[in-house]
Image 1 (cartoon, one colour):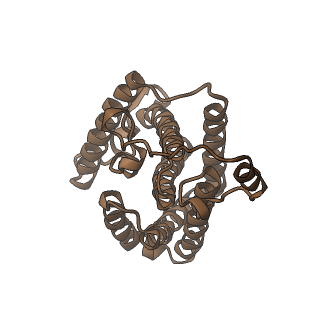
Image 2: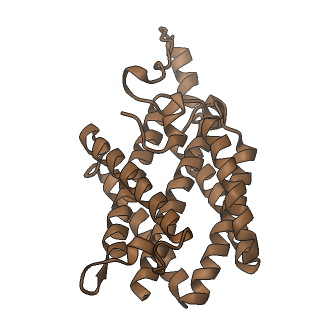
Length: 270
């Protein structure tokens, strides 16, 4: 089952099923008692020793990437004028990292920094218009990530083929809606603050609120698929460098989640 996140979907290290990468061949041999004693006496092999993905090493890469993103967001917060160019550069870097066959740690960290500038700038814009919204959006993002990770770790939530098909249809539909809404707003056909999202489906409840909640659930499911892809990579013994692909993929989903929560809160404030 392919992941919805292109960062994972375009990498054979995280693929599943017949189309996935072949399982690593581990040699087996009969060891003497002396050799077994020596093996038991050795310290546990680290990710560096085996050059394979581990959860610990992957988590370190994810944390490092988000630390760089946080530094970039501080720059964007103080210089919000950089948000627009950062958006364009970040989009280009996202495409490069997505379609690059072998992950580049440097490019992924540069993407984290540039995308951080955009996130910081857009957050400053919303915070100026709606004081206190930044803290609420950050808190909401952590809450969704925490609940999703807890449910995944407990085994209560897993990605399934049927749910993924529904997810993909919903994502395509949401993308078409977003592009169409943007065109209507830019051309002046719809002058509402949030375009079609401002349309009230029932009195006092705009479409943007209902749509925002549904999209947050889509983000959460995307995180589940990302966690599942990382699990596949670790269990298959994918090369350690692909931990950076995992970091990039998680970043893409979390940034999407944060921006959706930020917009939902702004619509609620209106």
